[in-house]
Image 1 (tube, one colour):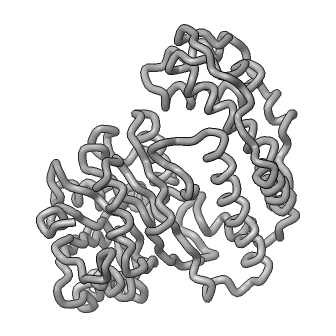
Image 2 (tube, rainbow, N blue to C red):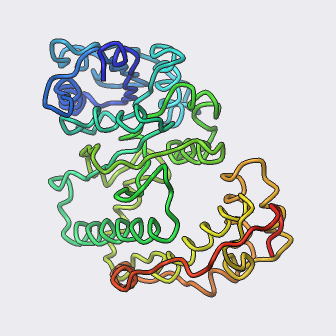
Length: 366
């Protein structure tokens, strides 16, 4: 990775009342190294301090280590637009201008500390041709005082990694091979400026703007690599600033693993097989009975297969299976420990796709 390339990389950092945490984040961003442990330089960190009642902007300027290119913008958004969604949108839009048309946007949070090679690892998939890359987000264990939350979170983490492995076996994605993970959130995300602009930037949603951005990328058939090597550590706040987010999940985990229900092993395998078959059918290859796999009607699947992109076809098929209601009756959620056990059993026996492909006409679900 050459210095000229890094000069077109901008890390977007929205921050609101983060004077106590932003110094640690900026110091970690200023200590980034490449794969050989050599210091990285040339990239820019753009801090958007919105509606701050403390000295976030001043602390950011004061705590910035020598050599780190820092830009700080203070804004006061109207109350109806002063949340995380608009703050991240403005931070990313500003970063896109700074990076230029051929640049790369990187997103993280002001309460998050990246590991020393985070930026290098997160940019590697984009250097290799991916449109976007998502890194692992680990909770700072010092912030989880409740042992029940910690235990449930660890079970959930193990479950989701196992589900990713099973899915990669049954529905392999060449752009996102195993080992991968499931997280694609604003604390550890990168994408090209061209991809960001191609989907219209941050979608207009009430919350989970990072998830909505990734959904937009998938809808447009842009590639996303979930790299397990790019890692950040974020705070485990029990009091959140958005209607739905990490804090709400932590509150649910407080009820214990028996109350935390997720898709079981059979459902994870069924979803993977259904998606694999629809991907094949979209490309004109028959790989199983789509109606039986998706538990929906031929008419709904036929409409899905007429979508202009594979991402939109998959989205329509998922909407169809949920609206029919059969899927949820067939696959009720189960406690996370039971789901993990079921997936590990499937991985142990070596689950594989169970249909031989044959050529068919695109658009036919039969």
